[in-house]
Length: 92
Image (cartoon, rainbow, N blue to C red; front, side):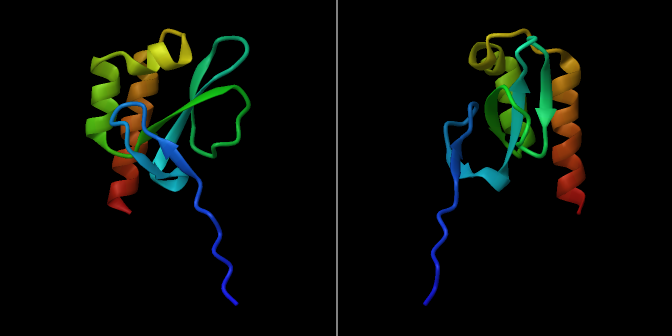
């Protein structure tokens, strides 16, 4: 008897693709309005998901999609951290 565990899907805010949670990076806005990258996906707050691709991150940055989704201003450091995580993962 095989147990077909449902894979949680999330929508990428940049590309609109539905992808498994593991193929995404979560960005979260805390109650205090602080925006941070949430690699564990466990932080509390309003979250938005972006695909683990540099193109998706650059698209989100260019079109200010994260700002709209999280209703907060996104510091450049957040985008840099996202790109760093993606690049590091593509090396592994």
